[in-house]
Image 1 (cartoon, one colour):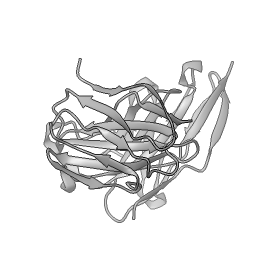
Image 2 (spheres, rainbow over the protein chains, first blue to last red):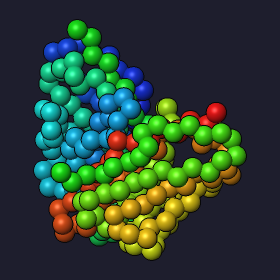
Image 3 (spheres, each protein chain N blue to C red):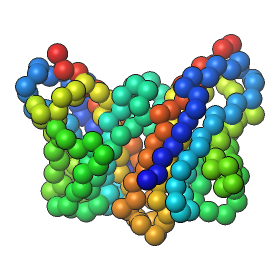
Image 4 (cartoon, one colour):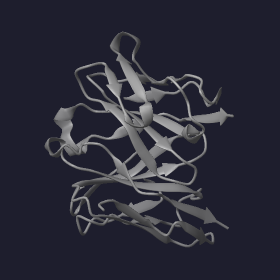
Length: 117
Length: 115
């Protein structure tokens, strides 16, 4: 069964500092990997995704993530955090492309990011 | 603009009552999903539907029911059999792989509180 672990429940960083949110996954085949962001009381917005190819993927809002198969990780990074980045971040893993629309995502428990000024 | 509309945003219910949460999408997506979100537990899949008139149970389907009579609509009923229904409910949809839309798009959510 597929699973996702986000080991950090809560992270606090200063505005302008760099950020890395950790994500480890368990999946038996080539995974699809995603990072979503959620503001309080809102739905989830896709930050970036990895399907295949270049293991360093760029997303919106200046975020990037690196797929490391050997470590089963897909950590999210941002070189300089802005106060508006404060939110909850979810990593998710899904089945490979061959399952089409039938694929389901499994989400981690989320990491809440607090940004201090 | 295309998107997913969930209603109501907030809903209060007395114990023993059934409630129905609405989810409508105009993205022309085939697949639709319902997730439940509780603090510290991430998102858990309740039901999903790949095509009209067909749906499958997710990981926590007990106490919930759905229908998919139209491509655009996937309502979720929280029945009185659901032991702990207070939660934030998220609806999502996804297009076919070759449509370039094979990622989940989420609605803004509905918060259900049982009094």
